Length: 350
Ligand code: PHE
Image 1 (cartoon, protein in one colour):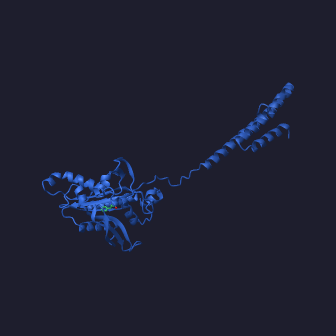
Image 2 (tube, protein in one colour):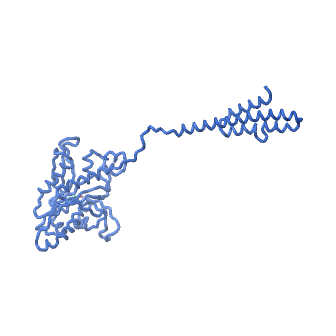
Image 3 (tube, protein in one colour):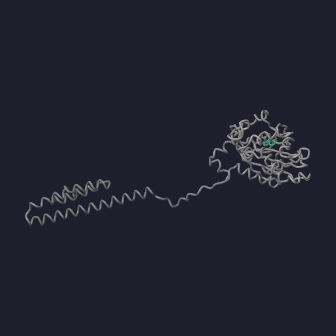
């Protein structure tokens, strides 16, 4: 094998060993670079005779072309390999199902509030909405709970700015302020009839919404929901309250296998007062009494604060816990799950 053939073979072997384009360019420089082997051979031509120059030059040129061809081939091979690797790395599985946009849904407590509104709506109750930042008057005083009344300590209250020093504003501790707010509006609308000694239409309203107390464990959250109910008229009785609440529970839980119990209790704004307990006859909670609402006949002082004559108008009120109702309906045992915002939990109610 002559010297030039050996040079070409060496170049081929060197190029074949280059694993990257950068390695290949280094290998190329050894042969075709400014001080590469071919360039050196070319420089040597100057010392030869014209005839020798011709034949030797042609031979070197041939070798150079062979090396260039080997280089181009190797460049192409490396480029192909790189493309293959890239295609492999970025491979798309077109048979995979597409990514779907997450589907939203109503929060379980919102579902309960909607049910409550629909059921009471079907029984002729309006739905009212009121402020979550409340004055001392509406939250306590108008509800027959004056300052220093011991019942105030039943509510560990979040006070906020505003109001007076003696009676600062607060985050409402219950939805009962809506009894006063709604009744006052109703009475205002029918003032002329009342002043003329005529009757006003009955007040029948529910007021669902957020309420706040300094309280936090598996069954208490500092923010929770209540739904107030108020029924005021000239011929309303405890029997009506029992009837309505009974109907509500059966419809809400879609079951006749439940019993209600009105257990004597105390609230400053009702007299007499009762806690409403519910007992399921079947299922995992069968036989246990579960408290779902406070209730009672609206206290005469509260009827007066509504702008009505307690000798003529009688009211019944209840305040229930939609969070508790949601837990019972779906069998959830920790209230905090509702407010953690974990979609894995919430998605189950979609
Ligand atoms: N507001 C009372 C509470 O939060 C519940 C209640 C409402 C009681 C209406 C009687 C009448 O505990």
